[in-house]
Length: 114
Image (cartoon, rainbow, N blue to C red):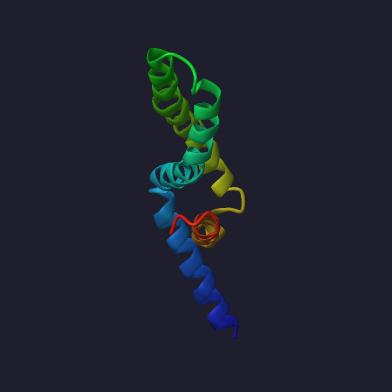
């Protein structure tokens, strides 16, 4: 039994170390998925606020929110997510990523986006 535990620990650590090299890309991927899940809600809220405004104001708000708002949100929060994913350590990184993607998939399913 101790041999199986050692093999499992070694596998988890090796997989975590391998994933750690791709962690900035994976956290960016998670952030983009998260933003895309809630982008429609944010755009509907914005549309309600600027619906009766002039065309130029509506377009400017759309560009500001999508390009700068969502873009800055993804760029600024991705490094924080990278640090958060390493909270449990390299050994649990693969499992943490799996759970994070499972949570995003569950949210997408509940929002009927699958």
